[in-house]
Image (cartoon, rainbow, N blue to C red):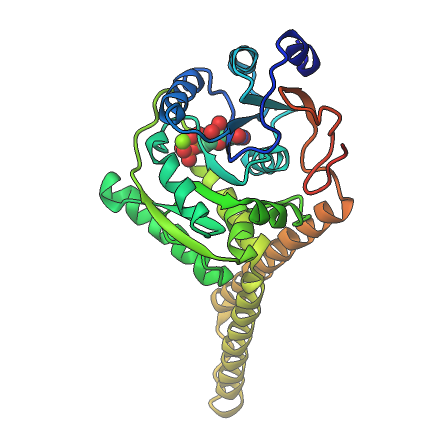
Length: 337
Ligand code: UDP
Ligand code: MG
């Protein structure tokens, strides 16, 4: 069933401008999404504000879309954007922000790791004038190893990019409409969301949130996906790896030059023959590896440039429920109404 049919079946007059938009990405979340909606509805039922949930399905092939579209038919505040395939969470978030109309927007995951009972706290912080309220994980809510890895990741990233991303940032965060508009001006197709958020500026603060276990289902981010996210984050926001390889190359060059002079002196003044293969091979392998690393690293950046110049859309929309911009097939900041 298409979006158009869904809205014709049940036309309901609701606000054009919402006080609050929750943006939630879905990828194989059939086990969590109903409970998430139930908790959000119960949390917000006593408030007078107009709210909406913008669900963005990022190419799930389970029952996520049928479940959410059914919920959308029952409640017009539940909206769904179905992307044409799996684009990755960053693209899905971008689609959600492009469709949201709230004065305040909150990004959350549907697995209930982010507590719905904190929605109003995040909302109030924005209403007090903050443009971005980062959720930061409470230390005691996670295991020691997880805390260590997470701190290492965020500290490295901060060091490499120089961006003011809080250590241990959570997914849950709220931001103002003008912050969302600024976000949509960022045209890059390869986007590291935390980096873009941190480079926007405006008035920023943090709120501590508890990190709860996943309600159901499995995490979609395994170790290798996290490593590739880290590589993407660093290459998208920092050219420091390139300068580091230049320095490493310079150090290697000095060492090998010193070694060559030392051996030449031995030959000239002490008449000791150049001894053998071992040292030659060691030097060749050392310089060869350094070269390969440098070429690979440069290749990463060139690949990034290649992807960006193609100017492909960040996402394509297959279908929508309870949304009027059904003809939007586009990406990033450009919407065709
Ligand atoms: N997600 C997505 N596209 C993807 C992978 C994940 O939209 O390609 C969504 C997923 O539905 C979930 C969120 O990203 O809402 C976070 O994923 P998950 O809970 O698996 O990660 P974790 O919390 O373990 O980091
Ligand atoms: Mg999760």
